[in-house]
Image (cartoon, rainbow, N blue to C red; front, side, top):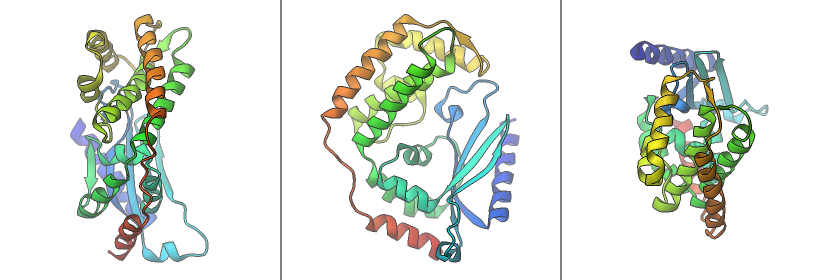
Length: 256
């Protein structure tokens, strides 16, 4: 089944390249399947980075920097122009690093691995990453986990960014995507049995599966949101101010 899905995704990416006249540099899984807590009916969140022909970047009328290819119950496929990705990398957008380090790679290129990735790694900002994940955890929790029956996946949508914050604070590197890797390194030992039980439940229940709120988990989330906010406020601004390396990657990409 997985081989068939991967083959279908590869075929869809090939069709995108032909239809849009682009070259896909890197394509990965970005959602719950890459996080390691997909439900049996989870869709495939395929994300890709592409580059256009040189002439397209010289047109007076700008070409869209996003390709939205497919959205249905099985596939959610869209991509970013490399130029867009490099600009976002300059501001240390964490999505850039998640796509770079996804554990599920559908296709990639030597150019992305040898020319893009080493440069992009130098633009990771601990402070920007922590604030991104902290805001994600807070908004997910406040919006979806504070009343009535709660979708189990929403708890994990709050938990994973909290653990990502702790990873960045501890290791000063982009957080891995796999929830189990984050939990092993950063989750309080006392919380692990309960979280493992919830993870097993999440993997085997539909996306729409719900359950009552969990007071112990609510307290953990509240406590950590407050703690992370205080720690983030004390961090120095560590964004990379240099455009030169990013400009060179873009120029090299359209020259190839």
